[in-house]
Image 1 (cartoon, rainbow, N blue to C red):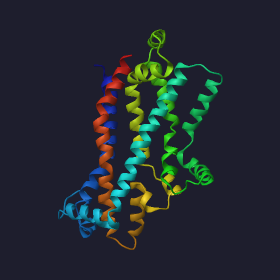
Image 2: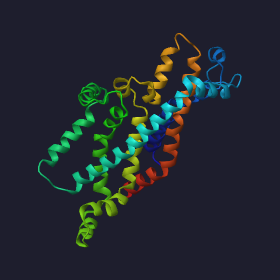
Image 3: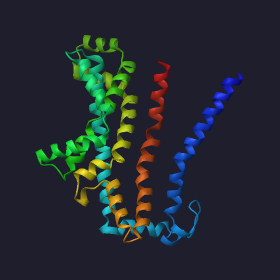
Image 4: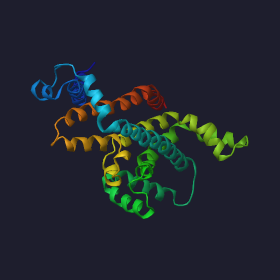
Length: 280
């Protein structure tokens, strides 16, 4: 091994280590803090256990507001799970069409999709609120669910992966056997695009689960809040009622669990897809 190559590997390892520590430190602090009483939260070291109070903290979270935390949990699952699943299917279908079909104005339309990638979500929140107000769905489930179905980056990624995973010759053979466009997509292309589907779903699920500004603009009914907005409302009460701080910390720890489960469960599919793509 040459010295420059060894030096490059060392620099990469250092950067990866720093990134890993930076990522895990807040989660580690959250784990310690959620086991403490309110007094221990401020009087004990951040990365050390004090009196183990996790069970009482979990009970307090479950009982606060008549169990509204679980309502927020269910809302987040519906917004992120249902929205990501349906939004990913739409993105994959759109990306597949951009890749495999020719139609007038295709590249200009795709350029408009790419422009959508550059627009931050916060910039579209107010126009979306005005549209939702026009059709009368402000402060409803649909005001948050429908906008998350649109994912320009997912369409871009699906087109790129479709060009690599779905050979045009296979589609031509299916059409020669009499398969229509819809059956060709469902039976031939979609199974080949499974790694792309999983990758886009992971991005979409994480983005919607952590979505905060759009629900803040659209919703005022606490029963419709996702976890991010519900924990924010509890945190606002922490100034007058400090006991809400332990509720926010314990609730935040619980809110991370679905992200970890989804990532760990789907990781092998995602990594297999990336490995297959690198071979191609």
